[in-house]
Length: 117
Image 1: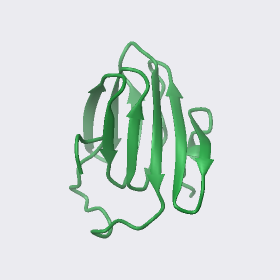
Image 2: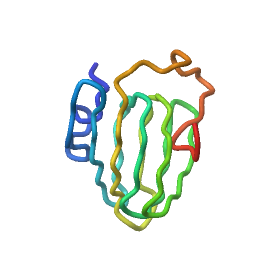
Image 3: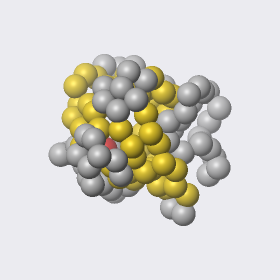
Image 4: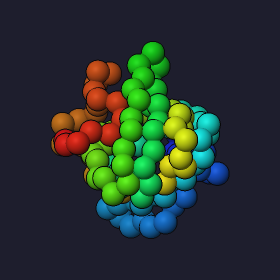
């Protein structure tokens, strides 16, 4: 199964730039929208809108609320998400193509975006 978010959720993710080192995705959704499971490599996320989301991986879940203009590290992970707020989500993901310095993420790695690596 292809876990690329542009394939699993093409109505929500859009490729806006790619070269041999990075890939840049735009993500847009509305309150109540959900994504199917998909995978991100190590990424930087820039929020263009304020939003509230629930990110889930198996039995683990975390609620994330961010303001517009925030920049967050997103460690490599597979998850699904849901807009649980009252505003549209609009973000940019800069995905790194190089392998992570510390290998594959462990099952207890942080889920969703974090303020730092």
